[in-house]
Length: 236
Image (cartoon, rainbow, N blue to C red; front, side, top):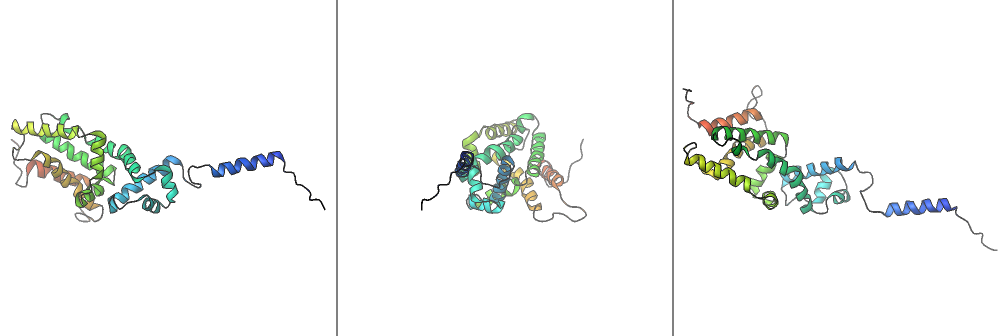
């Protein structure tokens, strides 16, 4: 007995072909959130993990696990950890650098005002970007300097060199303590602001009635750098 041939309507066959081609087409994994929102979430997750466990121990797979997405989702946006770091530098670290740059040049004849403003900007940045303080602290402790090195390759070090020249000029002109080591001015200020702020993220500083917040940390840092630990002299 002859087998009856089944004819598939042309429209149905065309739709099936289009659907199959679409299913094979590479792209964002199904079920993902909106592109920019998901991408920003993955960047934020990477920064959290960098601060928690270091850059070397953070893989794209661990970022996917922390963000509760598939590894394919992370690979859709970032093909490698190096590319992810480059994006973080461009979109997260350069804005921080811009917020901290040029302070000493804005106060060329007033070192106290410059140092005070820089301390405040450190606190503003660390408050606005919660990942900044713990990530900086981990980098110091573990000597994980990848971000700074890549930043140097990306934008150079002229801002820091200009600030050092400004500090040395203040010392020569008698406006700043000559015993200060210019490169340590930045580290001292970072240590007096970012370290206590990072600590305050894990445990309470001060008392319940008088907690030490970001404003109090900035005030303490400025007082210690400008006036030292001796009694404050009355203004004439």
